[in-house]
Image 1: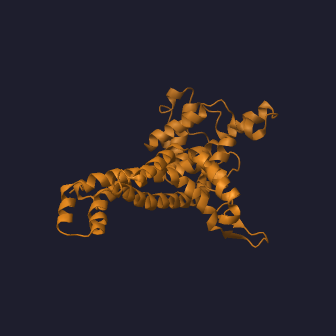
Image 2: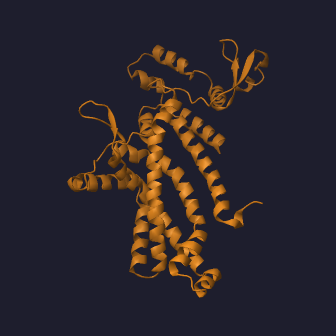
Image 3: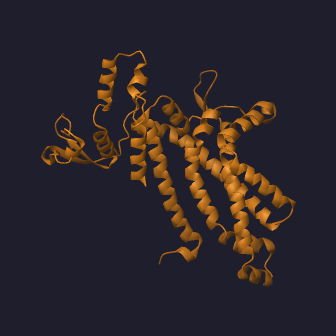
Length: 342
């Protein structure tokens, strides 16, 4: 999956007609300066050469020339492997190198390290809110099937799934940050770390997390409500639940100890997909609320055609998606003995 993401991103962005060197130097820059900058960025080489070099940079096992000359001497893309001389190379183990930003010249890995914690915190809080509230509302909807509460939650869930996050961000910011700002005390925009007005340094402003986390959690909340409701209805009709009721167990004991545990598998699947998806979905939510995380960094990089930042950030999100899904497979075995591998 990661190899597919890397390949797709590389050719997608490098086949676009925009020229990063022209954007960095300005439209009035002369052709010689643009050509020199493209040479410095390595964009004067054939595209397939750039692709192989990018894979070499990302790989934890890297091959480098001992000399300062280019480690490929080619006349065409098809001669690359044939012209490769192992006697003049060094094989090294390293961290993946995500290149440097075209704009700030900072390593992309450093940019990700500085911004990812804020995005991860935002995604975790949004997922925590949607999971806890979604499961409780899903249980309530299942218990009151066919009644007003069930119909009301179904309508709200459909609206929540249909409304895009960037649209809801504008509405929520306008209502709770502008119209009701004096009552809620919430800011329309703001990040986790805020600079003190008196110049005494940065401090953490937790209330700036509320609106973006609430906005980001609305769509997974709607999905979790419906999944919990449908799964609970299936489990409550099973024989072992009727047996537990016949033995005289209390309603809450049957509900939470027996029914809920066995109805969580589809919910966990949704949580795993949404947690990774929220990291990507936070892009425009962060930008609207002024939250300084990886999402807003990606928006700025797209605006400036800063390819290394965009590609590196998306690759990190894809890697986290893979890791989260592996962890979910492990959690399946812990919760449901039927899927354990002995």
